[in-house]
Length: 278
Image 1: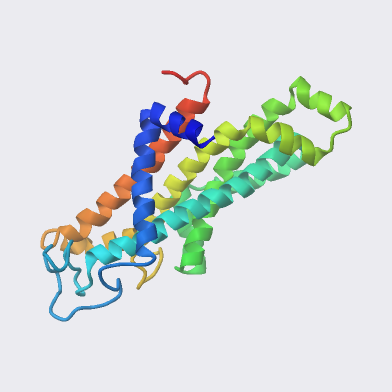
Image 2: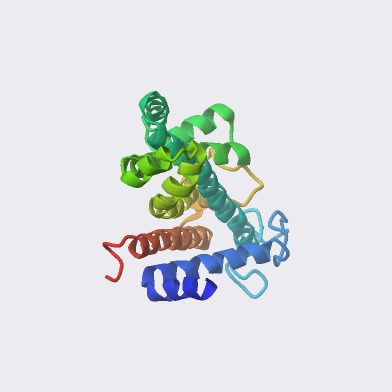
């Protein structure tokens, strides 16, 4: 099984490059749980806005904190929130999509209207609205970004479930007396895995981007957490005097989001029979 997975990854260039990039950031995230050169919150006297040097590998910020240590710790927030939002979106969005696609009628209408209401505003605007009401915090950031992701997953799975639910094998399963839960778990879900897997990677990417956007606008994860979007916001006025403060968080965000997008593209190409082998 593991050999087969690696064979698929090495066969698809997008999936391979995305997996390598994401694994690199995941390794950094894991290492930062146990080791960083300095405490990310520690302020060093007389070390404000230092350029990269032997002691401070990527320099220091305006308060005299080590930028490299803060980037390492910040990876925990970006990757953690991305994976958490992706997981919640799968559990909630895919489950509701399967229920709506299988039962149809009033159940489908009620759930779809709720999701339409959540999608009435642009995703970032909805996230800003939720955080503005509840206040900036780690939990509220996760909640707002998750509310944005669930409707997208719901609509994709619902569409796939509606198509599968009209096929003969579902009718046969109902005729022999199979229960609703068993039909959804054993028949509908396996045939909806392709859009679920692809959209999960997209949800992770959008969660990372929206979290950084909230931080940049001042409504994200508050200090002293070293979130990459907040770091960009704090250093935007120092772009000319200390460009390293914006370059490195921006590069990290770019590569991490790129990795999840490449993974989603690779999964789509590999799992879609029409695109496989191109």
